[in-house]
Each structure stands twice: as structure tokens, then as C-alpha cells.
Length: 382
Length: 88
Image 1 (tube, helix red, strand yellow):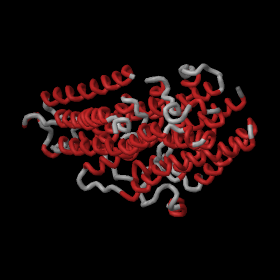
Image 2 (cartoon, each protein chain N blue to C red):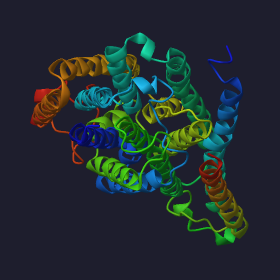
Image 3 (cartoon, rainbow over the protein chains, first blue to last red):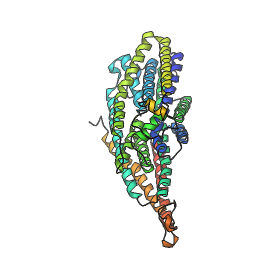
Image 4 (cartoon, rainbow over the protein chains, first blue to last red):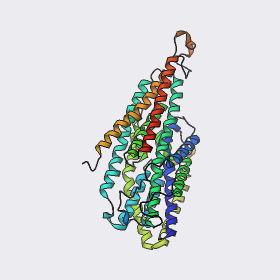
């Protein structure tokens, strides 16, 4: 029982939820923003509201991310805390570079890393990690890409001969609908993960009984944190997804989002908690493949794939390191010091990002072959 | 092998995913095409605008068929969300 640490853990978890929100806005809204179906600010506001609704559409018990992956009786508050710090750090770094990487994997990696540091490798249920995280992570973008390729092909084939204005008008409307579905799915999926983590912390602290459901204040605060984050808009990631991978037209956007929404909702129905980011990226790639003459920038895709491979181990290392520091100093002071370090690191990254800002004003600029930070001088000059 | 990949769920996800994720947008495209169909010669807009500015065509049958397509898409989405929310 340590209520001081518990408060810090809850704050960190909500902070993670917040980064989760702005990191993933692009999954739902990038293509709608890129095709100008929605003005950028309206898009992120709509997505924020739908995330809020989605979080309350609570499907199952808040999917306890940790329960199937690590031995819960080994999990202490410090482990949860260190795992969250690992997740946030990776989320902020990838946001800074404008790389859409999985928030779920960042969180899972962080928790696994911290668990290994705390209890050794036997604390991790490797079978669960492979079958519930790694295999779905490999398959989901491929499935999403396949569905989006077929969808794009069919749409273009069937809508030949439709007058231009009807076509662009109609598909933009369709895009708004499908993007809304992705936002809703994101709320039901990702907000749940943080709810699960906070509940786990409450159980570890003995505040609530093992096996109890997330208390209402947890659901409410998680829903608000993720929708605020979404509303902030991760413009750097949105830019990469909307403009970097493929030049997208509104029929393609609708195909991509329909594929994402279907894949995410179906998978959560079957109990796979997969990464909305991987699915969205796969879908967008798929629309590039399904339309004749569309250019797919494989170098950008390759860079993302590299980041995906790194996500679990990198977040895990940070998680393990944070656990080491917190445990080395010991008790509440250790956790407080790591918390302060996290705040400092986040602030530095934020200030550095201000030098090459991406906002709702330049998010749709022509793609110049670089993600958010490679072209420091040129972007400012332009 | 089965304990690593649930093949049954995988095929369902791919199959239903194709139906919902690719089929519904395709139906939407069909609806759009139907709705924007030009009417018989007399009812069509001025020749200069052919293939141009109209969003809704002038063929009542087309409009009705299109509306039916859109309704089917909406119904499928509603049913899908309901069954996912209720089923888990």
C-alpha cells in the first residue's frame, strides 16, 4: 500500500493515454485531412469526440494488457510505473520524428521490460507475447492492406463514369463516415488499454479487489485523456500518414478507412488487441497498391517498419532502465525522481519540436521526401 | 501450431473483413453511380454540363436504387457495431 506512488502511477497512465491520443489521431483522420474532406481542426475535434464515445462503449472488461503477458502476481506499482514511462518515452520520440508507431506496443514493451528487470525473464509469458502481440502485429497490416487493395480496386472500377463532382462530393462524405468509424474503434480499443493498466495498478496496491472492473472515475478520466490528446492532433504523424506514404484521393481514403475500421472492430471482437497504427498504415499502403498508377513511397514504409520492429525492445529497455533507477534509489523517492526525469525529457523534446513545427497549417504541404525533422532549414524557410 | 495462431479466427477476420471493409465501400460506389445517373435524353441537363456539375442525377429509378444502396451500407454498419458491442 503506497498511495503516493499510486497517484504518480495514475498520473503517468493518464499521460500515456494522452500521448496515445495525439499519436494516433492520424490513424483515423490522416487521409480525410490529406484529401481535404474535412478541415484539419474539425477532423481532430470530431475524432476526439468519437474517441470519447468509443471509450464508454466499453466492450469487454477493460482489456487488461498485462494479464496475458506477464505474471500478474509479480507486478508491483513500480513495474507498472516504469513500463508506462517506457511507453511514453517511445511515443514521444516517434511523434517527434513523425513516425506512426504502435502505442500499444510501446506500452506492452515497457511493461515487459520492467517486468524482466524486476523478476527476470520467467516473469514474462512468452507464449502470450508471441501469440497475442507479435503474430497479430505481423499479420494485421497485411490483412488490412489486402482488404484496402480489393476495396480500392472495386471502388475505382465501379465508380467509373460517375461525374467528377458527384464522385468527389460523394466519396468525401463517405470518407467522413468511415473515418468516424475508425475513431470510434480507436476509442473502444486504446482507451481500454490504459483503463486496464490503471485497474492493474489499483489491484497491485490493494485499493480494489483483484478481478474487479475499472471504477467509473478510471473510465471517465481515461476517456477524457485520450480524447484531449486526439484533439491536440499529432500533426507530425498525420503528415507522414496522409502525405508521406501515398498520395491519396478521397475514394482511396474511404477504402483505407473502411478497411481499418473493419479489421480493428473484427479483431477486437475475436479478442486480439492489435495496434490501430499497424492496421491504418497497412490500409493506406493497400490503397496505393489498389489504384493503378498510384505511387507508394516504399522508403517511408520501410522506415516505419523499422520503427515497428524497434518499438517492443526499445520501450522495453527504457522500461527496464526506469525500473532499475526507481528500484535502485528505492521507495517513493525513486519513483518521484524517474517521474521528474520523464517530465524534463518530455519538455526538452517538446521545445526541440517547436523548431520544426508541423501544425494544421502546413500539414498538407507538398511532401518533400522527408519526415518531420529531416529538413530543419528548408521547412522554416518555405 | 494452433496454440500460436487461431486459424479459424484468422479466416473469419479476412473473410468478414473483405465483405465489410471492401464490400461496403464497393456498394457505396454502386450507390453513388446509381444516384448520379443521367435521366432520359429530355431530362438531362444542358449538354455542356454533361458529366460535369450535377451531384444528384435525374433518373428516379437510379436515385431510388442508390438510396437503397446507401441504406444497406448504413444498416450493415449499425448492425456491425451492435454485434461487436453486444457480442463481447
